Image 1 (cartoon, rainbow, N blue to C red):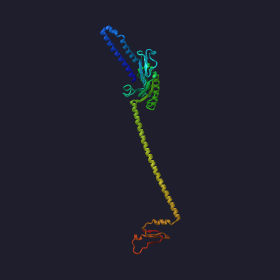
Image 2 (image 1 turned 120 degrees about the horizontal axis):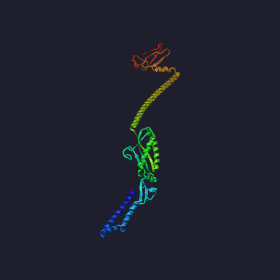
Image 3 (image 1 turned 180 degrees about the horizontal axis):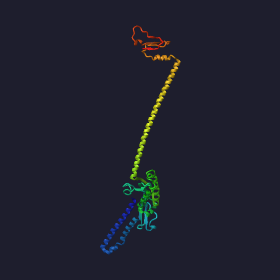
Image 4 (image 1 turned 45 degrees about the horizontal axis):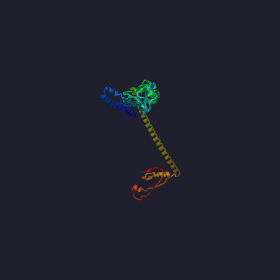
Length: 362
């Protein structure tokens, strides 16, 4: 990082300057000691040729302490001996700044968004082990809540954060305030409400309350997350049994509905078949009625039509037929020679004489 590079460069330059000064002073002391003795050698250390390098190394050291570069994701609070209250009233924002060496020093704070998590998972939260918030609902059920908050330090309030909390603001403010508010608000809800749509109301209420408290201490809350809620083993088992029972009832209802659908389908099928049969009977009756009407019309025009149809229906092997008196009938017999072998000559016509008695001889 740029701030680290500048600080390291200035510190390294100061160290090299002091090292060169010490080497130079030792060489001057040894050379003077050999020529003029110890007393002259000690006096020579405070001479201008030795003090000049000393002042140069000291100036480089003071410069490294005076130049402060604040990175964009940081804000610096200046603790100052000359300032009223021992601190500058305004923090140093990102950029290059100067402070009074030895009389002032900066304390840096991050201004990027930070996430603090309290979770039941061993390696998920900021603390190892189960760090979830244990709370009791209005009806006495114990629940464990996993939460996270996303927040940062307000740049304009960095001085008050330093005065009130220093680097303890997470452990001494953020953590206890969250745990306390969560327990207080959960106690206003029943376990059923916490496990239902009221969970959103709980989350929104905590967001509002924590935002106000964070703002009072110079912190900006971006979001409060109610990540997970774990119920006691007994309640979880009861919920599971209830869910299984509901699923069983739902399955039975589905099966009953399927049976009702099948019965309704069969009923509709029978209704359609009966309707089709009734329509067929109606059509046949209509056809018969139309046929009888045609026959009646034909008989009204020609009374002999019945006799014609009657003869048409006579079996082909009838040889003699007796009719009532007064009804002579002559029929051609083209097949008599083929049906009965006779001797002599057969006339292909037959005279039928009516007798008083009606009968048929095969």
